[in-house]
Picture (cartoon, rainbow, N blue to C red):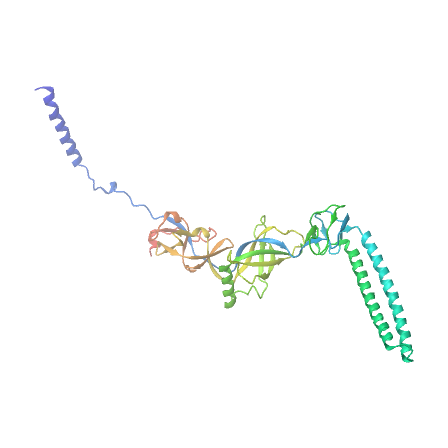
Length: 399
């Protein structure tokens, strides 16, 4: 027999022996089965029920209570500037001086005109007195008396006109000293000494501007949904009306932690802006230390809701399921998905308006490892992370 004829028979023998060896293995042995994974462990706790006051957050900007553009009332050459750019000024402080000489001459001329008019009046009264005596004796016609009486009235009118001209000239002379109309911080001067400036009611030259600082306003816009909520709360008696009461306002600057400054609402617009669907609100704030400056941004909190008992949980306990906000609640040892309606953050906790009660046990950590309806092991802790109970076994969770 050749070598080629022996190889197939030898290969067949190996196949048969292999089949017999495999047939002796036990695939049904329990040790070969994959062990079921243990239930995931989560940290859970009951919500905190606490009496709180809600504050709604807005972005505002400081604005001066009084803002004045300083302009000249008379025309002339600027002769003096009596302030430093950017300094604080008080109402009535002298700021600019316009050349007084032409206006002083106008006052002298008006005084002279008044004296002439007064002398003419005295003469007219004397003539009237003489005519009255002659009319009684019928030595002059009554027409002469009437003419002299009219002359007196005309002289009196000229005196009044001269006095008005003199008062006007004195007023123009006073206007050559431009004084601060309000107290506050002054801007830079826009015209230098030696320039001819225009005065009057129209096209008057802008000299500088002043903004008041204490008190100061903070202005912000409230969206129409929040406005409606405030109105309905006022009607229900759970929040004071912002129109009839000085609602408290808390303010924080960009570099502040929290809202350390306080103010009070003093104005609410009478209509909703059609373009932005917001209503303009304004609060007044004390600024004795001059920390706030007009134009500065601020974080503003307005009283949103009166005091009430709120259900609160850590914000990390909330997750998103499509468009809904949900939390996991442990019930009968299983994770149950619960839709919730959320409120603002207060003292580091999230307010839950609807969907939870104080008795529910809410998963606060380990949410990524569980799904709705899954058996879980609870490591119960309070919201500060302090262990309240020992680890619970799956059997105890299902009791």
